[in-house]
Length: 558
Ligand SMILES: Cc1ncc(C[n+]2csc(CCOP(=O)(O)OP(=O)(O)O)c2C)c(N)n1
Figure 1 (cartoon, helix red, strand yellow):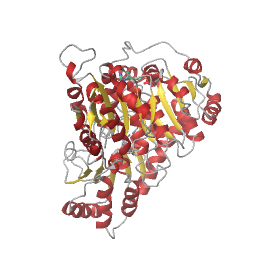
Figure 2 (cartoon, protein in one colour; figure 1 turned 90 degrees about the vertical axis):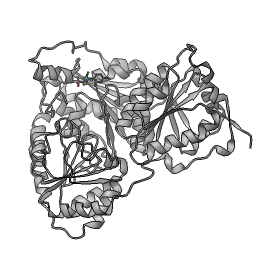
Figure 3 (cartoon, protein in one colour; figure 1 turned 30 degrees about the vertical axis):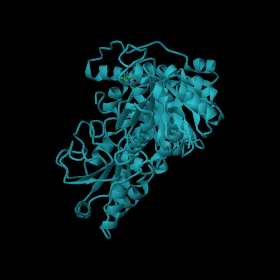
Figure 4 (tube, helix red, strand yellow; figure 1 turned 180 degrees about the vertical axis):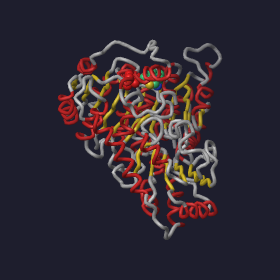
């Protein structure tokens, strides 16, 4: 067999792991890799972006909906630093994203070569694995290691650095092989311990009102059917974190919805307080979910199921820890629990939801100008298909959609970047989600602050004819921070306002079909027209500023 170049081997290794899309931006150090992508017949589509941050967010959105590894790439120096925010977000959200950065030649190191940077060190604390491949003949094993690190056990991101001379070096063709199963996640699931399962089953059957609090880990593990079956067997309510939405269909009688400071409401908090046993599943019980570790109350008996052994016991005294894959853990509990006395979780859920949605509906029908966020959520829910994917940025979108937009199908239909919450995520993540699940409608909802971070990607969207629907909730301020200044700093507003942009005209200039809505009566029509438009469409909605809104946010400083 004739040897391949390092660049060719990288292309083949991605192909062998089942990669179909690569999101990225070109650079000098990437030229051999690009040339291999151009020359070889590999069946992968390269999606050229206008910013490496977007490339990483696209790979993240892609991975979330497709349950496959998302791949992004950028060159040395600025490319490597710009790719970083999306890699961090994916890693902290347990989403398998591979960031490939090309690098200066190993022979140029330490000689003030343009763009030189210790990429391995930069990415090491932020990924499951970071490796700059120093020798071409070690490339295949490094790629296999990265895929194992991303998809086996606790899932997350990985980084591979590809120096220029390594791209041109020789790789023995016989070493270019892969286990294609590692291209999707979770690839190697850990089983729960039998003893812990038995103890958990006893605790669940004897509890008066056990309640699940599900994080992103349920959907990552594809454990939605097991969760539904277990909740139904027990009659136990299911609450979720922001990332845990989709663990159970929201019209399920046991689905309480989102709890916590971002999207939780008083009725959901009070319902959670009724639990005499909380089962955290794939959930870190972090500051937002638990309203800074207060709800559920400390002292509530806890069972914790998580793939990461470090998570159970971090924030709550945990009676029983099941360190395993969520799907296998929940299935294990189902097998262990045969006949149980069903609890009346459905009544508790019904009462809480009635209270929550009565408040919401009263606001959603109001004709106030500027338009109320509640009205935007209600209108979108009415017009979008039930299997649509909604991607939300921080600011107004995340808490409002988490609290009030009912996702009627289990699975990944809601995406938000809850690990770091960087502004400017949703437009790019929506593009990635479209490529990951092209048959369904994808909608990105952003504040005008977020729009400013990401507007350049409208060109990518138009060039690739991505039928993404975008909604800008325009209030000409960094509203979330302004709300924090209102509630915590006696309305001393400082450096949070910016001028109004006509986002529809900006979008039109890029070739996007756009609508501007300032009157509530025009909202639904514009949203429907945008949704029906076959290509990219944007609706700019002049909305009530967040600091004046009745936002489902209990704390602005989480
Ligand atoms: C990259 C980044 N910088 C700063 C923040 C802090 N931050 C959180 S919310 C927010 C304001 C969001 O403004 P906008 O997108 O206009 O939405 P709004 O809150 O007005 O609805 C800011 C600045 C952040 N999340 N990400």
